Image (cartoon, rainbow, N blue to C red):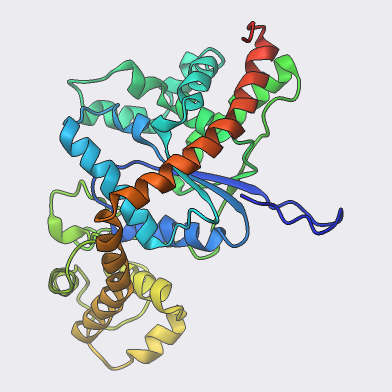
Length: 340
């Protein structure tokens, strides 16, 4: 989190905030769509990353499994290349300001705004027996996550644009009432972010909640499993490796292959000209196996070194607490709270 300040003309690095829920399985979609970009962003920005465990409990968790998921998610992100020497990377619940500012922002978020959130509607339908208040108000917690660090930018996928827009609305509303308090964050669209779709239903995003385990690849799948899943991937009857309308399965495989190899779609089409889908599926599977091999190896090293992980997330949380406390105190002072 150090800004280069060789002279007064040196421009401060912009602050980027992003978080991911430690809900068990990290998929190839998470990796290619977000995590690879997080690693790249560390070189250009002051990055603040969090494991959003407070968000996770909007759905009931089994305590032992929850703790295990948090540890494995932290190790997985370290294995993907998140560097605690370059970025802050902490567990959300270790930084008390997140929950505190979330309550404050709840009182500046309108009921109608929250009721229009599509994820609330989707999760309410999926967990009809547990439509709790946290599920309804968690966009305010998400806003607190971002605004606490005066983030300039937030990497967003299509499913998060609505939440960032709400965050911007809350910040502007608060600033309009009390003067400049929060930086209004901009969306950051990564140049090479991939939207990875299900291998079995390529019209849907790859998801660990897919009932068909052949639809998604996880970071910890072994090479044999990865190859089998790619060989079973849904394609079409044309049997020509070319990007186009009505070729969702091949488009998805080409996108995965392109993201890993850096090749354009035109280069991929030329490479597999005259070859069948079997050859292409094998090539994509092998590329993914080699991409994930060092990630799995590093994961095994980190997950067996609990002391090192604790040192990393404790140090990051201490810095994040001090940083975010300034924002929380400023907001509370503006509202009129008596601070101790």
